[in-house]
Image 1 (tube, rainbow, N blue to C red):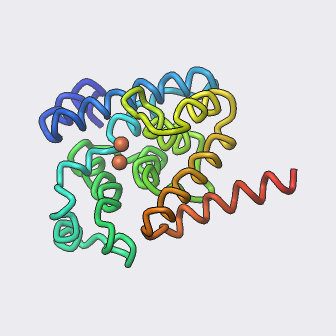
Image 2 (cartoon, rainbow, N blue to C red):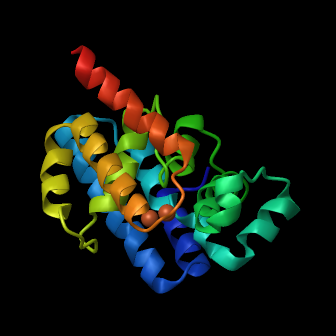
Length: 191
Ligand SMILES: [Fe+2]
Ligand SMILES: [Fe+2]
């Protein structure tokens, strides 16, 4: 695996400036969350920094790119190919940045949809992506506060926001998102 500095330099050369700035913001936000929740920082740092490294492939080219690489595409990704940057990110993390750690790769894989059974690392990356300082949407402050207090409660709010947004826009909802949402609702009810 490269050093974090080498990864940072390579990422900067690979994705648009705005996306790179966002990646650094997510990295810094994730490290703060790791700090408040007493989590080890090394893997979180790599997963957060590289979470959008699949964005070097433009959304319009991502279906063709996944096909070329032999990466599976589900029906929802086919219709909303922006989702594919997560899979392409895992591919790049492995083959371009030399990441082999499954937990780091899963953080990248599930940062857009979430899923059930996520590690704390993956939750931190998912939430950091949503609440980094450059984000501005109704309710972001509440989500920022909650993320510092309770990762699962914050995940549940994030899923709810996302599902509402997708419903209102008449967009597809990825089953991984529903699985993540249901898991947390069930856990809250059986507590
Ligand atoms: Fe992303
Ligand atoms: Fe992102």
